[in-house]
Image 1 (spheres, helix red, strand yellow):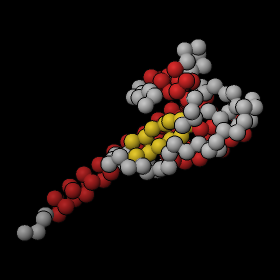
Image 2: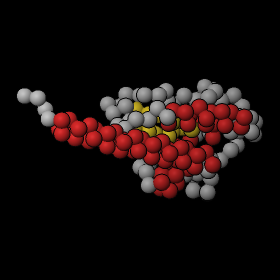
Image 3: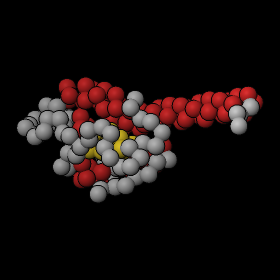
Image 4: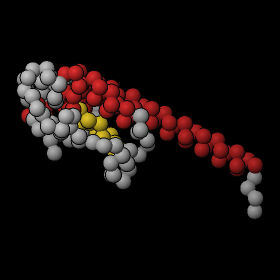
Length: 148
């Protein structure tokens, strides 16, 4: 039995509306995560710049598999304790990480993390130079999972 033209047209309109809502949702999340990442960067303390240049954006598909590379340090091994040594890496690494946000699709999860070995110590500081992630999560109404 053929479907009526009205039913076909209604299905097209509903599909278009849902697709528009999904696109709006994806854009909202992309803008939010860009703001979250920038807030984390702006509030990160800088000694050598290694911590600040290693805030990593990780996307996971709905089933939990990684969609983007995550948890990689740049450089892999910290070689210097010299103040400001890694500062030149901050902007380029941040730009690379923000490019990942464009890959976000509805159903994905987004995480911002830092694999630097002393990131947990920075996060637990209460002297105004810590709690970078907790403060960003609170500011934007997001979940904060703390040190895992």
